[in-house]
Length: 56
Image (tube, rainbow, N blue to C red; front, side):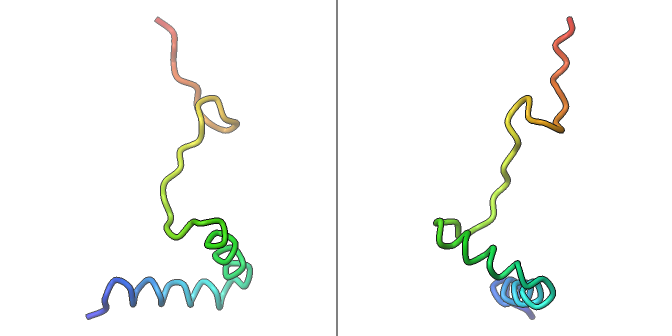
């Protein structure tokens, strides 16, 4: 059975091998203190987002 961290390592290796800029991206994120991925929602009114319906 594959452990979760083994799976993460495998996926990282595949990403690094198939998309060389991915390794640099991870290095930059780690340098800036990001060690995990998290969901980031765009701010309200950002380009490409749906405006809330304010009609009453």
